[in-house]
Length: 286
Image 1: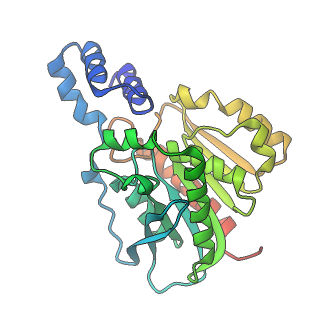
Image 2: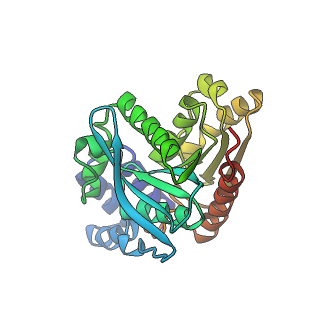
């Protein structure tokens, strides 16, 4: 597919562009409205692909106390296991959708207690309409939202089936939040950001966690912040790894996004992510 079309969709999903304007621009790039309607299903998420099943894990709905009420989440963990390293999973800018629930299950299948938090809980929870979810994300109070995620990390630390060690992994909007959690929680052991916005360089010295970042080589919007972030990480002697996957787009890990998903890059990044979590979260040392 024409990269200009993929870039337009990326702009649409990460800005205040309305659907009418997006469709008009898509029709221009495609050559006609009819062709635009043919292309649209290839751009939008197809949650039929989010069907991960593993009979060795158990999944439940839980909640914990947030700033202004209960925060809903999906919890997944290996059956019959205790003293598990724990991982907070942070969704993209449309809420806790089936893809991120699948990711939460996959983390659990790797031997961790995983918590997929619904950041939209204060606004009624993630809606079925993705565009509505994107609108609601923009209405969250940034400070309260950060505190709700920090409380999620504390919730994981208090779980009796956990070992007290906590990491986080986030995607897109959630990747930016993973970086923010690393800045704001000195007890965090590991933070993995997939194509997420980098934190303020001035805040990087606060990071105590091991950092891992995954970026798509074609993702110019997000990648513009890599050099300054990496420079600050080096200067502050922070344990980090940055991977850029050539020729792939933003959201390359999302297997429900057919035009952006890249299986090879996704598998490689996932293996590296799990390797970090196994290293940092396996045994309680602090």
